[in-house]
Length: 87
Image 1 (spheres, one colour):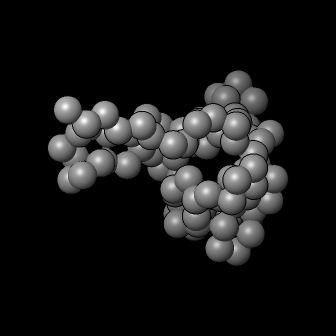
Image 2 (cartoon, rainbow, N blue to C red):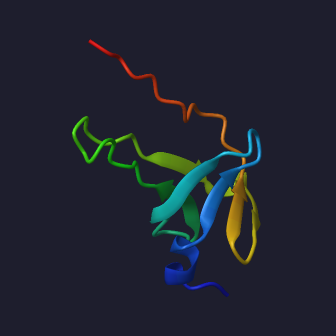
């Protein structure tokens, strides 16, 4: 068993490209079945929040490959690269 507090401090790493996505900020639970449906990686504030907040990343539970002692390996195909527009 894993406590949510322990779950939240693990780094989430995308096995598709090896990039760190962040840490789990929230989980989605199906109240009918009592099962975790997805984990949510909170978007980070950019440049001290000046340009707003990145979008949250939602990883379906079925896309979690392995939960290790320090990291959670996931398969995530969405774009994590952010294009900055300079004026």
